[in-house]
Length: 496
Image (cartoon, rainbow, N blue to C red; front, side):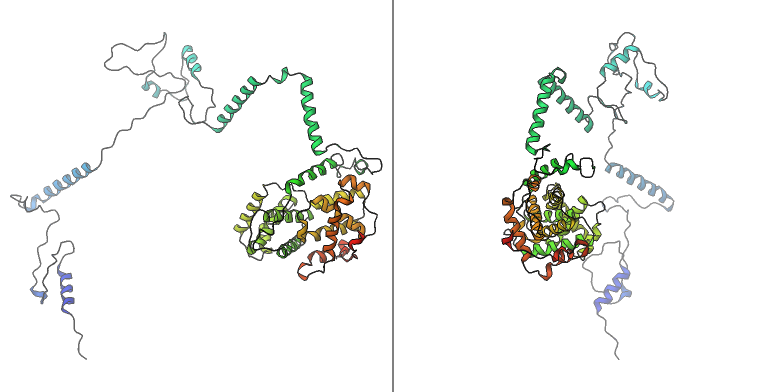
């Protein structure tokens, strides 16, 4: 087998690599060398050798003078280095004098006259200030103390330094104190002090404000008609019934219902439908039953979902996240020990991350204005049932009717107090109990004609054939714990 041929350029490059020093500059026009032995190695130029123009008589000195040349070169390099470095400006530091010492400007050299001094005053120089020991107390004349006290500024002193009028730093507490002082002074100039007001004027203003609040919220209206049973009076000494102001509480809740009215929003939701909302509410009922949450938590969660959907557009993938976040917020509001965030992530089967759930929780709170004191129908139902003195099976049947109506989209525009009255009335009819009494008219504030159409709507929802995907509420109230009220025979709308 014949040996491999090498290209002449390769040999040339190898020869040049061994010959030419890497530190010297090689000319570009190098002829090709056929034989490496004939190559004459060029002279290596010294790093610090002088140029041709400056050579002249600067011949190389003997071996003994090499150290002298080296030292001269070092000195020259150091001088060049110092020239390149920019000169450093001297910083002038102003020494702040102690707060208890009065400083005096130094006398200029050209001036022969001493500065004007107060009688008995001593000049304190900077050197004297440096020599003062911190632990020792300097003896200061009384006149100096009077002058320094007069110059003190009425500001809160920081722990680090003493503030003066020239100080730009000012704390928030000082700003608040200034504003309060200015506000008090303006009020004092505009209106006379409270002590100078007549007692009759004070009583007149207070009674006028109290009457306005009572008229608006109907507070203190405990005058029960003769043909109405006074439930609060009979339980006046029971601390758990709070009969002293129970009527005021529910009058206040009814007054707040106008602030949380929900419009018909399904037309604006492009990706959602009524059926999808019913599936979501059924899933939220399952969460309430699995975590053993209060019923108030479920009703508040559904209310938060409707409020959010009425103001925000949501896709199919985000609908379950909205329901989980609403239940999470409601459980924090109504539960003594709410479930953890990991529990809700587990219920969602890992469809969402922790960050997504927390961000949706913040979004729900912002939409509702951080106001979670929303009147819900379940609270009204319990109040009306107690005032009517109904049994527990009848109340459970009314709770079943009311909870089943959560999946009905047509009920979102109806006020919760009216829904509770209609559910209770429908339970009366299903159990063959007497109709709407005057006691219920007084405590609910509704007559039968005002909510009869709502009762028909709830009854129509119960009569619809059950669907396999929406069986959570029926199965829940078919248990013996709830007296199997879901199996109660239904009635027609004509019997209402």
